[in-house]
Length: 351
Image (tube, rainbow, N blue to C red):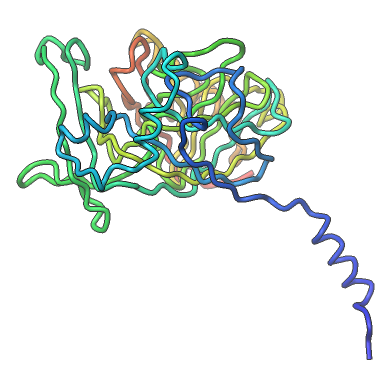
């Protein structure tokens, strides 16, 4: 009778137990695990994880406190207790300058400026059967056309994944987080306008199955997420989408240094299973579009890890002949958002 496994089996067992085990964690939204309206490298992390770990993160909507939800017609039973707690218990002197309630920060161990954070959005769950859409005085892309405020409650059918927008009008649900970002280098940043740390991108393409790449500019990165949307149109013209409460599951992967040789990632980029996505954020819409296109040219000619690199001239021509330049949002002032979608099926040869 063999009383112990063979040497090869012992080596395999040793390797198994020595290999790093990626943790699966949960971060609930509470008055002490959210940030109200900003990204800040000085925030104490709500959670610290290692590269490869997965975190399920609960978030709030931007529809407002219990009283406002009641006024819209949301039954009390459909308002989560954690949302009530946050609105009544979060310290008033820690709010702002933006209005988003973001869960986090999640710090990534050993993350340093110059590294890249890869965020794999594995799953997004809609937590309530309602959404709201609002515009206010002086807000939105057409403020002079609608010089008043309005809020609309929209019921969600989570089984059929449809929003009952109006009689005879149903909107397919494509949940995503309007705001996913990390800390900027040294100071508190408003959660409203997106920037190189991503933040309030309002990019409807960033659904489950998407990967987001962010350039890290502070120790730990300090990831925050919120502003859940059940769906949105490009532009988000009245300033809100189908605002709702979401829980997302994210895997965080740290890349030490740049992703591609000496070419450091400067602006956020993303990938879906079928598309490469570059982004631009600026106070001028033309400049924003230039940034998004230039960032795609840089990716295709210098950074694409999967396919042979193109010349800058061919990258420019490919964008013109086969890619889409879309307006992400027009209302997260003072910065517009534009993204370029480049289909992966254009590339027939891999590195």
